[in-house]
Image (cartoon, rainbow, N blue to C red; front, top):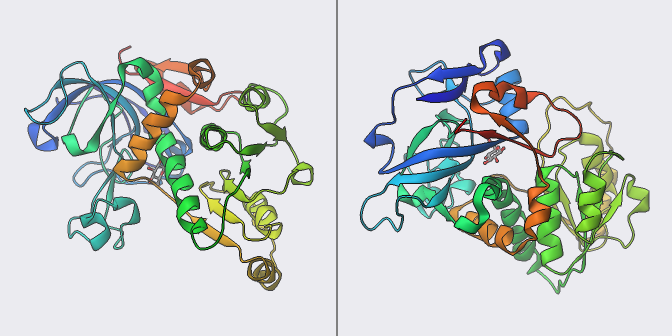
Length: 347
Ligand code: BGC
């Protein structure tokens, strides 16, 4: 079978490899790969060597934003042939630490977790893959290919859960949210904010392409400067990971705000910062800044629910480009107008 592979950090090695069929020890559920989404993490693996192949292999099968169709599943797995599933990215560390032991591998304490398609485990970018039922999340047939957005949506579902949990420290009924970054994660964060009935502003630097229209059609406001954000947000979900944006957001933290940092960006220029000033802003405003990465199973379930409730036409517009497996490396070229590029594993 064919799979999308790379030696991390060596872009010239990115290509299609012929690999043996997955074996039963990789999981009891056999899945036919339908699609995988490409994100900044995949580009970092290819170009900068983030991530590691599994022990004994110099190549890594990429793909952590997955969608597949069950081919065979054991009795009692709650899955039947033909069902759509999204595979969970992270696996608990082998100890396991107390968090992993409780299914909160996204909070792994010892760092020995693995991640499919990223850290020490092959990903889902293959024509067939195996997974244990506990790591396969059912995707309703009505979602179809949109199920490939379950993983990125799980990351923002977790971000909103963190807002609720942190907000419980005091009276907190937020009605306005700022999302920085109108990439797939930012747009999905905005979708979930709108679903919560919030007044939503999305900040991004681009003025052309599909992003401003996607934000407007959500019923949210699109701005290119923080100076134009009105009303003041009670929640900020930062999805760019760009140092200057993070600093601007933190320096303007409104009273009692919850700021969730959900973005990662490598190679953005360093910014000079007065930690004492930033400290004063955060202290005097009772602000909370919380970082979040990855997701537990319950967040994937929340993500499925959010995508199901969303306007289908709007979610479809997030998938701006489909690339066949045979040419998957084309997906690494950023066009500037793409939101989410998806690899079609059947092609
Ligand atoms: C993935 C997460 C993963 C993180 C760090 C992100 O792109 O969505 O599941 O934990 O990268 O490896």
